[in-house]
Image (cartoon, rainbow, N blue to C red; front, side, top):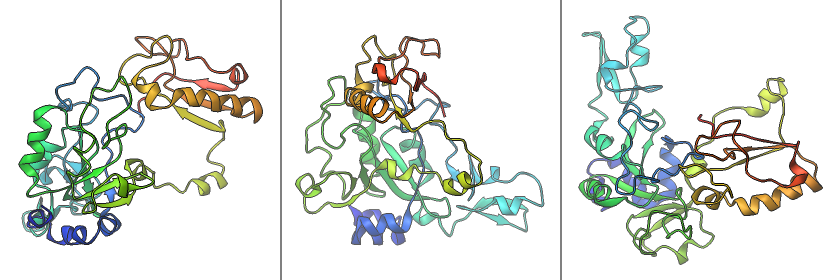
Length: 323
């Protein structure tokens, strides 16, 4: 399968044939289409993973280098002094015509425009960008397929695109032990479906077949902002308010009275409550617990999930915060 994918991504896939480690080392810039602390995308939508046409996950799919657009022609700002500098990535500036056009010299190793439309509007599929912000012909699969449409999209492009698995959603690729999970599949359905896996298992050799390349890495490893935080602290640009932060999730629905369900289970809320006793009580730390207010319409006035008595007055509990 890698050999066929290399017909469209020769320079990229050659490295993938050697090792997923080399692939990630040379490629990697990762575009997160949803916040890691967001709701369960499958609650109430069990038969499809398709994203809303103009919802949270929608974004332009053409790289202009340092920004995105719907087409190369829209990369420019229509300011003659700036246009050529805004036309990079998978686009190039045509000086004679004074317009931004598609760069045909790089299209052979990019994910096709049609594949972007068919795959990236579906939750399981995550794009990979190179150091110039271009969509290379590699797609990471971060959750199980939801229904026949996701499977059909994968089958349609599997011979021309390199698909790799990446751990992100619940315990994927292994089945979830969460009773509220809506995705159910055999233990070996995804472990051997892709030629490589970015995973967090202590002993990946016991999970994946020997022919599958692996690297200890997951989606959260790509979510770090490029900020010199220590320098900003030294410059007194930040004021420390909390010693720790915990992120809760309602799983796409309101937290119930007992703060149980898909989200609290996934975020290991029962263990967090024990840890809070230590942090607030024994260590006398201050903290914040995000998205931990209950009710159909979670607001600052909604009742919070129960926390240890030692944390009262020391911990800020917020509703779900979009970011």
